[in-house]
Each structure stands twice: as C-alpha cells, then as structure tokens.
Image 1 (tube, helix red, strand yellow):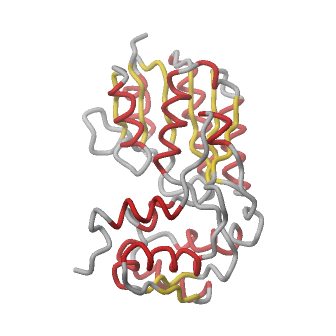
Image 2 (image 1 turned 90 degrees about the horizontal axis):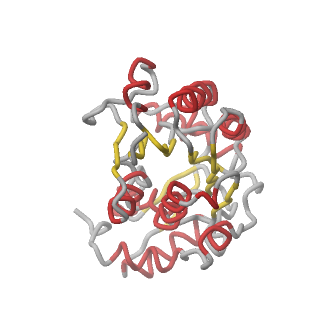
Length: 270
C-alpha cells in the first residue's frame, strides 16, 4: 500500500481544494474522473479497480448528486471494493436531509474499512462556480426556493475537514455535519451579493414545474429540481457545528465568501 489518496471528482468544487491541501502535505493524489490519467466513471465499474490500485484512502463524491435514485447502490458497491482493495479510510461527501444520501452513508459505514461522513448544507460556491454564477452576473437568481432559509457552507471549510479526515485517524468513525454560521433565505443571499458586488442582485421565486422545464432545457436531470421541493422545506434550517468539531474553529460566513469572490471579478457582467 502506498501513500496514494484517490479523489473521486478531484477537479470539482471540493475535490480540487482537497487536492491542493493534500499536495501541500506531501500526499500523493490520484484524481478519479472520466478524463483523468487513471479514468474513473461511476457508470463503468471496470474503471473502479484500476483507480483503487495501491490506494490508502479515498474521497467519495457522487455526480450529479448523492440524493438521486441508484446512487447509494453504486457508492456501496464502490466502498466494498475499496475495502477489499486494502483502502484503510473512506471519506464520503453527503447532503443534509437527503434520505437517499443517508442510505449511501450507511453503505459506506458497513463496507468494512475506516470511514468519515461529511454531510453538508448547500455550497456557497454554487453561486460562483456552478449553475448559479450566470444568474448572479445577470442580477436575477430565479429558483423554486420560496423563503426557506439555508445555512450555506463554504467549500473551503469542507475541503479543510475532508483533508483532515483523509490524513488523521482521529476522524475515523465520525460524522460531521457542516453548515455556515447562520441560515439565509435566497432573498438574504441576494442582498449579501448586492452588497459585495455593489450592484443590484435580486431573487425571483418560480414554481417547481417551471424549474423542471428550465433543467430540461439545459440538459440536466429534472430530478435535481425535486431537491428544492424535498430539502428546502425547513428541515435543514438549523445550523450545525461540524466545522468546529473537526477543526476547532468556527465556520466561514456568507459575507466573507461573497466579499472574497467579488474581489476576483467572477460576478462582473460580461
């Protein structure tokens, strides 16, 4: 067994940040993606074994979302193969309040190897690195989110916790629930983004049916829209203290994130 750590989705929002941290620690990183040097594809199990060859630990993220039907079965099968391959530690990125994601958590916990579960609120980076960045640039965030608050979490905090869990045995057998320090509605988010960018960003609520049409037109799974119906229903309003539990410091806030991103120009109009 080598010092190699496999990062599934290692070029994604959290994966690339984890890679940076591990490389600074001198850990050999293997990125697992369809286009990486050692290809990994959730839908092609023949890629799993080579990706796990010689791996000491693995960070598991599932695309497009762990809360979709069938994800738990694939993650469970991969975790069992990782255990048989000799991996000593698995860290799973999970989602708060998602029943199917919790089934995937159980499958990892039962795989027969060390584990840490990192279950997270909505990423702040969805507004700067994902499907909402163009909406912020255009000044109008249109979603079926109502006025339910969400304690958005910074991907920088997630990466700090994951990197620690991959390199320090004290985190084995722990389930960390990560959120930001306060819950914000999407209207609150728009106000924070307006302050950070110096221009007006508004939030426009739409129906779930209309959002499914938007996803379909974008070529994305329409099931992603169901997460707004089932998760943004108040179940995740409370904040959690997983960042402090894992790292001994408070979580970063949305205002800090927004100011940091605005300074890069990512939200400047085209």
